[in-house]
Image (cartoon, rainbow, N blue to C red):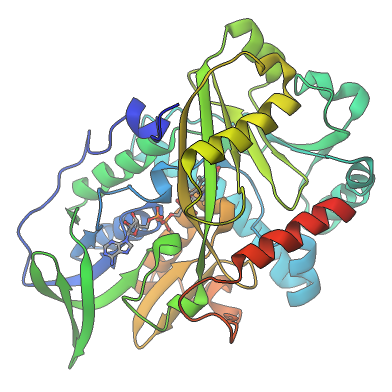
Length: 423
Ligand SMILES: Cc1cc2nc3c(=O)[nH]c(=O)nc-3n(C[C@H](O)[C@H](O)[C@H](O)COP(=O)(O)OP(=O)(O)OC[C@H]3O[C@@H](n4cnc5c(N)ncnc54)[C@H](O)[C@@H]3O)c2cc1C
């Protein structure tokens, strides 16, 4: 098995976009982070006639935006019922609608910018790992239908084979709104669209410091300094100490993936008859799907750390996938990789500002659509095309015990294992 992202092996980044090498003296916006957030924000701002420069310390799209499962599903990292309990029904409706609109927005951008990224809306199933998990689903589905007007369909265990080729699960809940794509193709296409609107893209160019100089910011990069009227931080799980006040607001969690050889067509049809996206009901969630070219992609969080050895990760994940799908016992898994999710303490994405510097992050495992949505949203807010966003109105919780190093993750991992055991 090779320690490499399958998506960027199939489609190396940089196929369609051009990078700049000479810094302008001054721009309206500097955006730090060249993933979905940074690029969708840049796209909106450049369309509104602002001058924009995007910087990534690696290749454009190198972060989670080319490493993810490529699954766009409604909802946020925080459960919608808990959102309702905490913020009330009006906010719950607004956040849910945003998560559904985010998938429409993703589709619209793909169509408008003609991004060939294997997008298909095949729906997803949330799978119950225990009978007790399944027993909660009817009430949950009814509540979502009644309060949020969103249809989810119960799939009892007797019918599960119409959705997935295993006896492992106790049933599930299907949702037709979801879709899947090839992440590297999508982020590459976004970068090309940014080029077309005049955005300057700088890659392999780290931003080292941001300093307020009167009315503007001086941004120091690997190849020199430039001035910007406004700065947006779009670094999510890769947020470092560049703006020290931001670090306590988001912490990185590792997510890990393995991908198999191309499966025989008959086996593909058996394992996923409708080409769904899947995730299960555990705290230590597994997510999986067939790739557009017919491989099994299986992902999980392992121990939440960001530095688990990729061979060890592959052995954990391949044991899991073979337990669920005994048909894959002899299948070869070819690629193993990881990337960083950005998680906030309230499990909500946020738009905010510190010292006049703007940011948006904290999408958990929903960033394909939500980063696209919040990147667009921050662009609309900063160009005056939108007046408010619920994501900037809720308070952004921090914890006294976290400033720089997420030392608490091994303890959180143990706690989640315990919850999986007792639930
Ligand atoms: C393994 C994995 C699986 C996932 N699966 C899914 C999924 O199936 N569905 C889903 O919706 N979401 C999924 N996600 C989450 C989703 O990929 C992310 O939420 C989303 O890509 C975040 O996009 P972003 O642009 O905010 O950040 P990123 O794409 O992570 O980009 C941040 C960038 O900032 C750059 N950077 C950091 N500091 C600096 C600096 N000082 N100077 C210059 N550049 C800097 C980094 O190099 C990086 O490229 C997954 C994530 C991972 C890791």
